[in-house]
Image 1 (tube, chains in turn yellow, blue):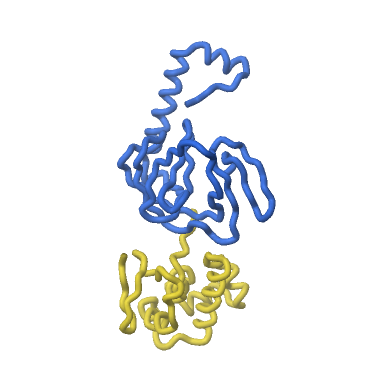
Image 2: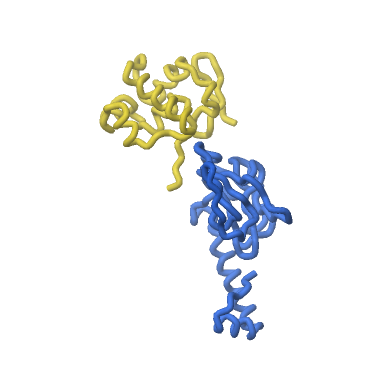
Length: 106
Length: 144
């Protein structure tokens, strides 16, 4: 299994760099991973809002939410999500939130 | 799931077709979700033994119980959950039932398998005239 080293700690990830175990996540992980997802500087309050929202949703339902639901529940449009996470809400935000890769059926 | 014995949703229990010896239950959280990797270990209508299959599964259902009897599970699960964490691909007659779904072009052997089965069935019908007559008179025909 591939591993990634961030801020002095080693994490098991899948072939696309998604964390394998939700409970191994911590805020240092997200902050250290941010740069590889095109986010410069410290994560802002809006970044953390989305990250915690995704983690809570995943813990409750076992999947990542649909993108329209992410926008609606957080009062942000898709453009705003891409401003915050340039590599996209599915890839960037889920990766920083420590979720497994949001694979679909199609 | 439609071909199984029954389907349980919450506290409700629904009888299904009963072709596959499985009672299914629906859960609130996914029971298998993500990429899968399978080895074809036993004979089945579509894929030669030894083939490696790369697919995807996403299901809220799980197997609650199996009916007594032989289970012909064709795939060994190397990644993913499948039917019991170790196996997927239940076969009965010409049916292959699997939680994993595949891209048609990713493992195209299924097409050859399908045609092969159709050819075998066609040949069998030519060799067995009475079964054709049964079919024409409206009786269901065995198609193993």
